[in-house]
Image (cartoon, rainbow, N blue to C red; front, side, top):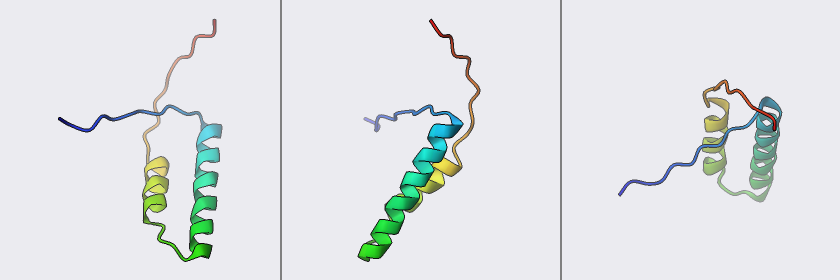
Length: 59
């Protein structure tokens, strides 16, 4: 059975907060002398994620 995929929909402000947080985490790991491969992959995925236009209905 395949791995279950989850999709996360965020706006531009939330996306910039996620990127900022990941860069801060990467800097902390570098200071500790630890590997940053996982964080690098996440940054790459967030930066290259496709933009999907959606209509939001407020109730």
